[in-house]
Image (cartoon, rainbow over all chains, first blue to last red; front, side, top):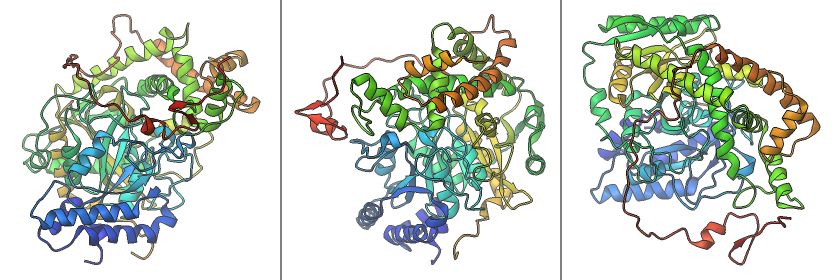
Length: 488
Length: 94
């Protein structure tokens, strides 16, 4: 039991329920792991050690009374854009430094009710805008597989923490790929649920028509369990689905039976790293061995997703981020008048990528350009969604790479925003269509860096998606590999 | 789609962002590049296509308008950079 930090959530729950380990021992083991490797990884913006151990003690006491809960005693890492009562929440931005929310996001309240232990808040690109976590207002996070490389983003802190054993699982958020892409680059599982499946209440808004909370875990089963705990209608978020939440863990374990997998040629194009394409083709072969039928499908507007996303998301961000003005919370830069105070605070408080996107979004929404940019992008968004609707008439899931490349070097792409945006080309269209998609490990490149496989399903078909992902995971051993870090 | 310097300054003013000369230069160049890339959308025929503002097919539901306790005033003010007698403190509006 010396390696408690390497357990999956489902394994740890079995041991906790059997009385073989305590939540305090488990949480302490993870905190020890954080102490050992965090100076290399830098996954956390803040670790709430005392509170975590107190929650673990409470969980053990609850279990001693004969009670149980879906995540009772499980230590988790939380992305810093999710509001946590009494714990500083900065969204990776200097403009929110020192801000302590007076309330919990709905997902945090649900995790707490399910008995989870919160380890701390993880690093991210500022306001979740980025693909490498290098846009954090505080520091860079390293990829546990190679400390000179990025963990992906924007949920890079949570993905790195889970890969490094600094949490059993974590929460990320996905606006255009921010759960799936870092999961891919760090060799872990990341699920973006259907838009509206999980409440956004208390998630600091980036692009409201796209933002979704999702789990980052070491196995598909853990992702199923966390999603089950978090999903469902929330009176505090009018965009949540009232549809009942199925038993995802149960659904996942069913035989896949007759399965039709769509493979879009648009996902195997120039610019995809050859060993990424090879690993994904290997996954296709595995599914054929499992009895799946492989069918060619077309998503002709895949190439347009980048332009559509980088008009719609910044436009929504420019409106959402108007609230950061130095009046009610966070950073303030003095000004002689209130107008000066606003401009000085925002000019100094936001980092370059956030400023760039606010500028872009403001332009796309401004008088005379609205029809040409924002409205046009919303119309092409309809075409992207129709591509998927059409493809799902003949297939159950769509398969492809999560990211065109494996983890790149820190600093390699920071000078050119467009090049950084290209890291998301395969994760944007599912977000625009509002459908669920999961990334899971499917191989390693020549440098030993993880490669991610992406599967997508129709809206609200998380059960089917997890079932297919689980079948692949059972047939392979990629998910069992862990990075060499520190002393173990 | 090259943005002029005046346009970039106008956008920064609309967004309440105080930026240096060097920042304005940089964003003028970078935003022009990004908008160039977005030009490709103009070639797509969307004459008959409705815009997607949300992917949800939900109808708005109504509930009883019930009075609930608001956030306590001291809680609401706790994070303010400057507060005075139950108010957020700001410079003159002019």
